[in-house]
Structure formats: C-alpha cells, structure tokens
Length: 478
Image (cartoon, rainbow, N blue to C red):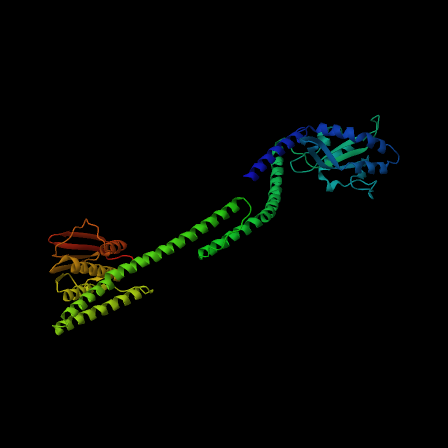
C-alpha cells in the first residue's frame, strides 16, 4: 500500500512537472523553432562563415559549446537551504554547413576530413529535407523543420545570409531528441513514474531486507530463549527461567511466562500431594472393607474356640479351622492390595461368581442364612467387580455386627449398561438420620461416587437394604 501510494504521488508529480516544463513546447508552431535558431546561432555563424576562408576553428568551438538544450526548469520543493528542481533538457547536436552543403563543424567532432565536400545525411534522415530547404535559401518554417513523430528525433535547419541578405553563406542545423507532443505528456509522465517506482521498489527491497535482518537478530535470539525454556517446561523442568531485562513486549512476555511456570510447578506439586492423599484414602477404604472385616471375623472365631475348647473340642476345632481360613483370606486380601499398587496391564472382564461365593462363605462363618438371586456368570469390568466385592463385604460385616438378622437376601442384576447389587436383611434396622461414628458407610459412598454410580440405603423395623448401581464402563478406580 505504501509503495502504491508513493507511485501515485510520483506519477502526479511527474505529470505536473512534465506538463509545466513541456507545455510551452508541446505542439508549438515550427516558426518558433526557426526563430530560436535564428536568434541563438545565426549571428555567430554569419560572422564565422563570412570570413575567407570560413573560420573552422571558431565554428568547432561554437558547435562543441552546444551539446544539450535546456528548455525550462521549475522549483518543486524548498526546505531551508535545500531546493528541489525539475529541468527539461534534451540531447542536442549542432551542425554548420557552407553554401555548397559541405560540413564545417559538428558537435563532438574537433576536425572534419570531409571539409569542402557535400555532407551525406544518410545517418541523419530527419535532417535531409530541412537541410536541402535551408541550402536552397528557403525561409518557410514548414520546410525548415522536420516532422516530429512521438519517440523519434527531430531536426531544424536555417539558412545563413550575409548581413544585407544578398548572399547565402551556409546553413545552421540542429538535431535533437523528440519533445513530447501535447497528447503524449501524460504517457511520458506515467512512464517516468513507473520507472521511478521500480527503482524505489528495488531500493526499498534492498534496504528493508538489510534492515530487517539487522533488526530481527536480537528479537530472534530472545524468542529462541523463550522457545528453549518452553521446551524445558514441557519436560517438567521448571527450574529453567527466561532472563529478559528489557522492559518491552518480549521482556514482559518472558516475565509472565516465568510466573506461569512457577504457578504450574506449584499446581503440579499440589496435584501430586492430592494424588498421594487420594491413594491413602483408597488404601484405607480397601483395608477397612477387606482385611479389617476378615480379621474381625477371625477374631470372633478364635474367641468362640476359646469358649468351646474345654468342653467341646470338636466344635472348637471347627471354629479354629474357620479362623485359619479367615486369616488366609486376610493374607490374600493384603496380597491383592499390594499387587494393585503396582502397574498392571488391562484386565479382562470377570464374572460375578466371586460375589456369590463371598456371601456363601460368610453364611457358613456367621450361621446367618443367605439367599442369592442373579446370574453368577454376569461379566463386568475388574474395577466394578472389586468395588462390589468391597461393598458386599462392608454390608455383610455390618449385618453380622449390628442387625441381629437371621436371613439375608443378595440380589445381582446385570445388563449391558449397568450392574446393580442389593443386600437386604431382616434385622431390627437403625435410624439412618443418625450420624454413624464408623467409616464403613462413608467409605462405601466414596467408592461408589468415584465410579460414577448411585447408592441408596433404607432401614426400618423389618430390616435394612443397601442398593448400589454401577455403570458397566467406568474409569479405573483411583
């Protein structure tokens, strides 16, 4: 856009200058050029040609003094002592001939070996007609000035007579660059503007390329430092900081990025601490819902064994065997917890058979009758199976300790979308609005919420029911 604006401005300025400089000459009558030649060259040429022989040295000095023609100049801009001019000039060649048509002097030539011989105008075709008319003594401007087509050279020749006009001494001729015609001033100006624009474009390109290279070196180095720091942060190395002193846009950006890196480092530390805390809570839930319950049941069996040992050794031995199995179950639970703390590949779906086996084992240990309803072959994700296993353990342990129930009904409903588990007893129930001091129910709700499931608890004089629903597809529990 800037270059376009400069080109337009340059074109308008060129049109103004060309119009002002060439307007007096474009389309001027031929008589004006004849009068100009008679006024400027004929008096001196008459004096030199009237000598006998003609003064060729003086003629050489005269013609070589004339090599350019200044038509007009104008002042474009003045700023203090600086002035910008525009001047219209043209390449101009002057020739002097004697009365016989022999060339006596020509611009750019110090001497002429063909002096005294008729000049061959083959190299200057525009001069032929005007020169012949001038040597014939013709004074008609239409014959003394050649036609001036656009873009070609033009010529004017005038006869030189003695002072009294009685005798033809010779002729003076001018050959010059073409002056634009009236309708060609604007195209000339636009051509000049286009050339100037190209020069301006080339100069601007060179200058801008060099300046851009020099000016971009510093910012490029600084941005590379920012990029290097960002790479280190992406690898988790927040000890790297960007050292930027200048208080500019890049410096302020670097300081904000340093602050962001500090915030990210603190956030990661908090997330790590939170992950450790969540893992501790998960382990606490698992230990409470599995090993603790099994150890408590083993303790009950051992206590019963101690009371029967003196009078019923066979029964005591049976309870002691139950305690041994419970202690072995505690060992397996602890082993399972340890294994879950290690990274493991994805597990295949498991069946619900373990949930029914757990209920039947519990019934044998407690003497409480258990009825199971559902499909033991129902497949579910391993994390869903573990969660339901822990929930069932907690529910059955609460029934054994608090409910006084004689029968328990375990119902498993399995679909493609969800798995539902209901554990109902016929005990005396409890007030669900009363805050429990234990962690069992709270742990159960946390486990269900972590898997996106739902939990419901109802209790009354006729018994208590725990109802849990978990989606079949769930994220691995944390």
